[in-house]
Length: 202
Ligand SMILES: Cc1cc2nc3c(=O)[nH]c(=O)nc-3n(C[C@H](O)[C@H](O)[C@H](O)COP(=O)(O)OP(=O)(O)OC[C@H]3O[C@@H](n4cnc5c(N)ncnc54)[C@H](O)[C@@H]3O)c2cc1C
Image (cartoon, rainbow, N blue to C red; front, side):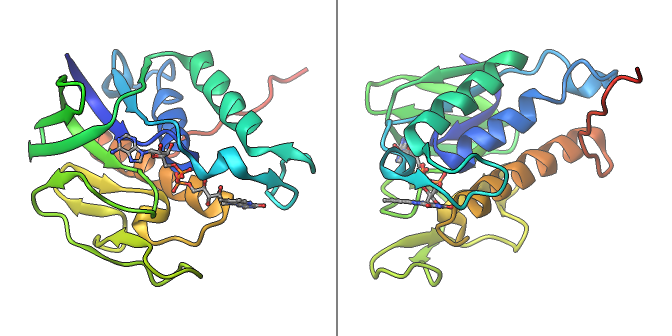
C-alpha cells in the first residue's frame, strides 16, 4: 500500500503531525488534495500515563489517554489518515520511494517518512539516521535522532517529538509534529504555507 506520508508513532507529535497534514485539504490547494497518510503505532505513548494540568489551552484535569482520543477524533474530522497498530522495524529508501517494514511482515511505501516514536529507545533499522543521547531529558539513557535544526534528517525523512530532542512537555512535542507537517506541506506547495481558519462572519 502506498501513502504520501508515513508517520511512525501515534503519540503527541505523531498525531499532531497527522492532524496538520490532514487539515490542509479542502482549501483550494491542488497539491493538498487526495493525499493519503498512515500512522503506525504500538500504543505506548507517554500520554497514557499523564495528567495534563499545564498544557496551554487544555482544561485542567485532562487525562493524557483521553487527549489521545480527542486528537484521533480531530484527525477523523478531516479524514485521509489510516491508523494501524504495528511496530516498525525498518525504513529504507529515499524521498519519493521509502519502504517501511513492520514486525508483522507488512511493507508500506511512501514519499515522506516521519519518525515520531518517542525518546525511550530507537530500534528501527534506518540508513542515514544518527542516534545520540538526548540532552533535554532529565533521565539518562534517553535518545534523539540528529537533524538539521528544522527536523529534517535527510531528504524526505523528518523526526518529531522527543526523538527530535525537544523537552518532554506535551506542547513542545506536539509543536514539533505540527512544524514537520508544515515543512512537508511547504515542500509540496513550493513556498512557505500556514493553515488558518477564521470564524464565519455573522
Ligand atoms: C508520567 C508522565 C506525565 C506527564 N505529564 C505531563 C504534563 O503534565 N504536562 C506535559 O506537558 N507533558 C507531560 N508529559 C510528557 C508528554 O506526555 C510527552 O512529552 C509526549 O507524550 C511526548 O510525545 P512524543 O510524540 O514524542 O512521544 P509519545 O507520546 O511517547 O509517542 C511515541 C509513540 O511511538 C510509538 N512507537 C515507538 N516505537 C515504535 C515503533 N517501532 N513502531 C511504531 N510505533 C512506535 C509508541 O508506542 C508511542 O505511541 C508526561 C509524561 C509522562 C510519562
